[in-house]
Amino acid sequence: MTAQTAGPASAPECARRVAVLTHMGRPEAVDAATRLVGGLLTAGLDVAVPTEDRPVLEERLGRSISELVPPRIEQGEIEAAERLPYELMVVLGGDGTILRGAEWVMSSDIPLLGVNLGHVGFLAEAESSEIDSIVAHVVACSYTVEERFTIEVTLRENDRPVWCSYAINEVSIEKAARERMVELVVEIDGRPLSRWACDGMLVATPTGSTAYAFSAGGPVIWPGVDAFLVVPLSAHALFARPLVLGPSSVVVVELLDASPTSGLITCDGRRSIEFRPGMEVEVVRGRHRLRLARLSESPFTDRLVRKFGLRVEGWRGLAELEDEPQEFPSTALASPTHLRSA
Image (cartoon, rainbow, N blue to C red; front, top):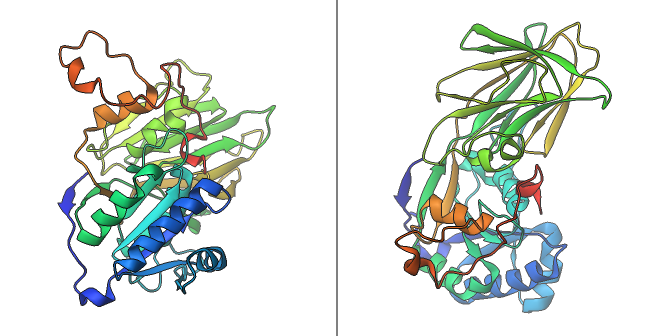
């Protein structure tokens, strides 16, 4: 993970453009988007929203709003044909909405600023009650950009690529039939590691280590670490522990012909394809990094304590935390849907 200070776009100030993506199915998100878009327009920025969001926001604000057109991505590619012309995308929703926003802007290297309206929002930076402050930070470009490790996924059949995608959290390989197990062979850096009869497996990023991989018993990896996390799911084997691999590693998973069922490959819970016996999937470091706009320098430790309501009584510096609100009780648990809550 790397961080850098944001600055205005190289274009003239009057041409500054910001994209806004909202979970329009949630009334509180629509209210927050109305205040955000109105504030940015008043400050002289050009704001673009998706076509389906414009009628509601234009009616509420009584003024026209630019259209946010999704990037055109050719079949079998993960790179957009053209870069989007925005300096920032603000996302109002949960981490699932941020993952949706990443599909629009990651190949254009545009930072995302998440405004949390979900549950355990690890990707979000601010809360919906802070809209006025968010507007001020965006207008003044007073934010830093944190870069996160991502992965790219290629599915092959008979040594030919048939599908490719990317993941910010994880790629999951899961059995298609509930009553069966899949038979997988895992290869690391060109060498066989193990054969597992299992419910499936995950290859996750540090960002995804607090999502599905966390629920499956994997470790939490600090976002400043560039690494892969390999987590078998309910494997019938003595050696079936989560593995942390270096960023240059190449992970290949083959679904054996002897497997009693096919599987399903899913990236970030959003993009899926069938995984048939004889196929193999390769996972490598992504060409693009997820760029997250940060308004503060709060360390990841504080984020973990706050999001999970972890008990820290007795720490010598506890007085410094007394005024910080606890968002969730100490019984809060992660689930595979935590980062897809919106």
